[in-house]
Image (cartoon, rainbow, N blue to C red; front, side, top):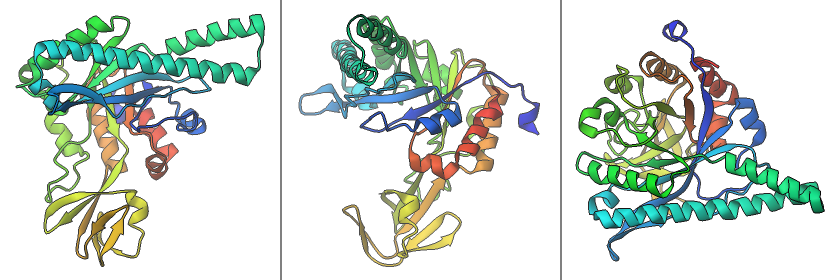
Length: 355
């Protein structure tokens, strides 16, 4: 009833793609079409602090995002650790902005060249037709990229350096809109956290509590926690919103966090795991999974936002955040996650916002 009483808004249906490799088959077009998805935030690379060279360095790069369909709009995303901000000098941050520009430009240039080769080969065109097609496809490719997202969980201590870096990135890449992720605490306590100097923000409505805590029920997200942070529309920056459709299985030994199981939904069907409650399992014997050793008695907490909780979280967003013309994105594009929730359920979540 709460959702139905809220004003519907026009949104863009979006997803996050956060893997380290990509091909034309990484995104199932039939699923994307069924969901009405026409935008992706795509992780290009991370930036970490090298303690030996004492400088920030791009790492874990997605070098190739060429795609023979050349159709979906993409926002390149760069994750920057807070350590980078705390350790870097201002000259180093200015240099980092140059490095980010150089790497993003290189990825897009090489991916465009490869995409155009795919398209021209597919149509088998020659001479003037080939030249005209290549020009048109190049324009389409360029039009798919008009924004850069910087992802960083900055702190009060690091915000000045972070905002300086964002300013330098804008200088280096003036042809792009610049957006930044906004954590829930940064949204609520914006007078303390500061407002990043960007065109728009991406409000991250997940990872709401510490997953390593044995006492948490669901660290990914809950409407109860969300209410503590989102209860007004005072944030002075246009926002998009990101919600979770991922799951994970957290392992605890003697109440202490030991790691995350891979492929949780499939692994937990193994007879070695005994279900003791709705979202909790216990390992009944020693086992090695993908090179990691787990012991008899290890406890596993399966976390996922339920359908009911997702609808409550969407209601909170609609009540408090102006999302007219915004993107609503789900983290993240993964066949297991999508199949777990189901196309109809995810499409229904989008529909709760409006068109």
